[in-house]
Image (cartoon, rainbow, N blue to C red):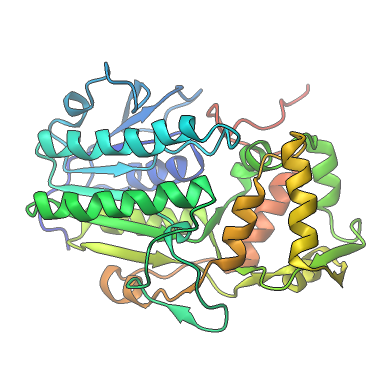
Length: 346
């Protein structure tokens, strides 16, 4: 049950992988009258009940508080993954921009802030059992993504202390996939590989061998399932952090079964050298530091989300990864600039 009527929700980063799903879920809810969306670039088509502002959250001339005025909740999703070779640029958007969002929400008197944290905020942890939300959130310091997510956890610690009347929720999802996000994720992480090349690799039976890297075991979630958790957080009374992931955990034998490939053992050090070389040559956009972070990520227990939000994923990890592979095969996308796929031919 909602503690108060929810009339207007503001969503930053509304045109990305998570943002499009969150906006879609919120726009279908009769308890919500308006979703005000903030993004650097406007979508080609806008869902019902949405209004839009084209803005950069880190731009000091943009009056965030004015956009937030009258909102029942702010859902903060805006995030820049690139350029990984220039971390001050991502720090400006991700850390300084997020801090501007938090303070603007407080100035506007918004009663609830739902922030997109991540499994990447967690310190290295176990792969043989799962950790709850009290696991340390110091991240992996070499990886900009983890460093920024962890830093914002500390910022929110102080923010909650200074604004006890605001309900603050921190979502910590696993890796998020849906078919429509495949083209964006290829551009963010895949480097020079073309849609056609990756599409072929994503077809079962066409990739004969995958490297089986010790310690490479992680969790995933379908983006639409994450969006349902955000909706529950907006409408409910929950506070604090929530882990979000689907079963089962993913490793290379798991992917090999989906792709009908066999695995060959590869030391993590060798995989890191190959990735690092590709990254330095600008052939791969995912940094070796992020690879190191993934090797250390703990597996998350999602019991708190089940008990306090009433949330369970509707799709398995197999379905989430399958959606990504389907999107890579089809160069899928959505009608927003970040998610744009391969142009359709007549």
